Length: 440
Image 1 (tube, rainbow, N blue to C red):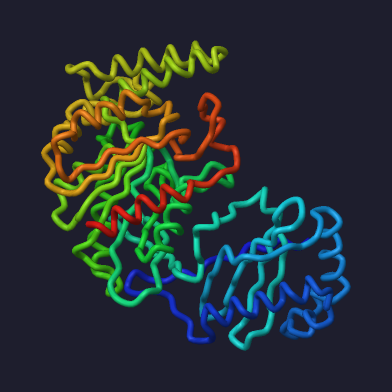
Image 2 (cartoon, rainbow, N blue to C red; image 1 turned 30 degrees about the vertical axis):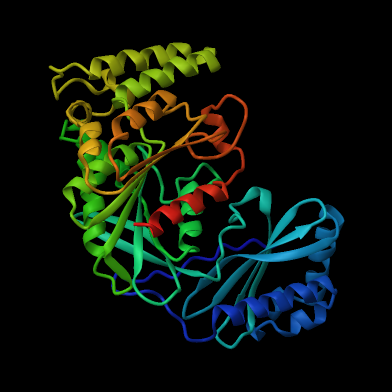
């Protein structure tokens, strides 16, 4: 079976990509028509709708063979649901999740501006990202936006509701490390779940590639020269440039900008809300309340029990974490003596960051969301958030049973390897976030 990757059309920061060829509803209807022709085995009718340039790629006997292979492997076809939609001046692309008797499969199809088929493919749903059912691709559009901050290009995607009027904007502030825009663990993409789910509820959501994910070679050069590197250079400087850029978009309500921080991004969110007046509220998912290095030591202690074969590695990292908390830490301390070989300046900054005090005094809405099975920011962090914010009338703290650090459900002891088991963020998380946003 043919597998072709379709790229999103890249646009500028000044506007959203629109194509007047035909609407989403028309694209969906044409897609459903082709699905039903497959189901009724009318392959000649499908082939006749293929653009003349591509007819040699999709003869009826090839379509018949592919469909027969699917039925023979996955059982009888039951129903279809749209799970992706992309539009450009050159094509309208829609993907359907086809539910068969045993497993689902993904059907991709693109039409040109004349409504002719220019692309067809089938993909195994268990091997690729598939949007959960709460994502309604008929209710939002996606556009590529690159924000430039000095020498750094920050490619991102704006998922925006197609409802009328200016939309509240949610910016996803990612976890520590070279995290991509989707927060990917192979085909698992929790930030994409969040973006599509929240956009389906009437909001705009922006997710982006961290500087460390695209410019690692430059950061290594700075590291070798012992240049200053802190969470400001890692996250905050780029985030503030993104805020300045996106709040000017005509589709965005500049008075309703929210930060959704995950992990370290959540821990930094109170500072963002303090420093940026236009931030209307913050959401902290799996954020540590304890000092970062204390949280790391807790992780190593837990993992030494769960994966004892790596205890030596965890003991070394524990020693580095303890060393990095020294109040007299020299900023020129050798990298290999610091956690994950990250510059001493990073840890000195974190040692001086009073995130609990900032959060406690913050006069803006806060929503702390914590997974019961989160071993990276364990339940001690949840309890500390509760105590810190118990008198802050604008703060909500909520614990979610069975969820891990990615907010994926499970029952066994959580480990890093669990993040690669195919999953999606549960619908109740999307509903809680959307309800909280709507109430601000």
